[in-house]
Length: 186
Image 1 (cartoon, rainbow, N blue to C red):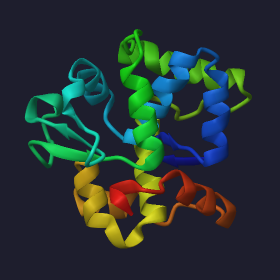
Image 2: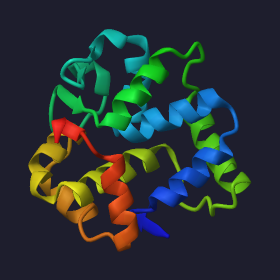
Image 3: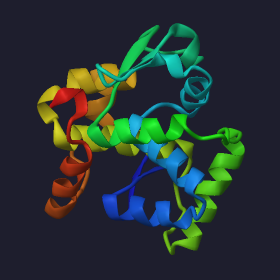
C-alpha cells in the first residue's frame, strides 16, 4: 500500500478494483473523470456546471479563478491537460444526467467500493484520485515536472516531496504510461 500524508495512492490494479466496486456506470464515469483529470473535487463539481471550460481541440479544461476556491492556491487560474483516456472520460462525464454527490458522500462511496472489491480502504478519500494522477504523471513524464505542477496547481517542491520515488513496480510503471498516454499531446 502506498500512502502519502495519510492519502492512498493507487496502482493501476488497485484503481481497477476500486472502479469495479462502483457497480453503477455513472459512478464509474465519475471516478474515471476524477482520476484522469486530476482535478480537486470542488473543481470537478464546478466543471460539471460549466462544460464550456472544455476545449476539445486543445484537450484542456480551463479553470478560472473562481473554480478552485482554495485559499493557498499557487495559481489563480490554470489549464488542466488531458490524456487520451482523460478526453474519453470527460466526454462521458459531460453526458451524465447525475450530478456529483457531496464530498462526504463521495468519500463514503469510495470506501464502500474499496471494501466491496476486497481493497483495503485505508487512506482512500476524494484526494486519492488527484494524488494518484499526479504520481502517475511524474512516473510517465519525469522530465516534465514543472508542467505537471502547473497542471495540478502545485509547486515543484510539492511534486518533489510527494510524488517522486514512489515504489511502483516496473510492470505498474508500464501500465501507468499506457494510461497517461497523450497527456499534453505527448
